[in-house]
Amino acid sequence: MNTRTEEELRELATVAGHELEGKPAEEIVAWAVETFGERFCVTSSFADAVLAHVVSRVAPGVDVVFLDTGLHFAETLRVRDIVQRTLPVTVRSIRPQLTVAEQDEKYGPRLYARRPDECCDLRKVEPLERGLEGYDAWAAGLRRDESPTRANTPVVGFDANRGMVKVSPLAAWTQADVDAYISRYNVPVNTLLRQGYASVGCWPCTKRTPPGTDPRAGRWPMFDKSECGLHL
Image (cartoon, rainbow, N blue to C red):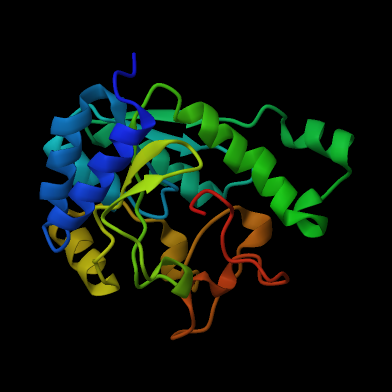
């Protein structure tokens, strides 16, 4: 049962955001685990398993919430399955209320090509709300260098939409930091990242991007959209 009020969680996030800025990712995770215990979880899209690996070293057995949209690349599901088999974590795959076929029947086929925000709400945002029930804090793998919309990501902040503390242990990491960590620990990586995909989401809304472009440019390339709504 949640024993902290929303205001208390907000204050915790504000203080920790200042105190933990510039600290190693493991120290940020350790604070979250010490503060929230079992009411802290990790979310992962499994473009890679870096965040899950970092947290598992500090908190073996931690819950990792994955949004199984029904539209993932096979390569993404492969990373999830490897993580489930090889890391000391508990992967929780959360599915939308409607299957893709049921969504097509109710809203018409290829909703993602007509109203992508609505599709994201149905297949990502609503499932995340359910997936985060029972937690006071969640960790995401956001990095400031990924896109302009993420440039000011705090290492610890308050998610006002959900009334939760949001932890971003990798916020200050660069792509070079990620690559070095992957190499050092042999972390599972989505093979699409070596095939021209700088960012990986659902297959209908993810395209390859030229080297040197915004990593998020391949997401919803036909729309003025670079976020699914999970991190707004």
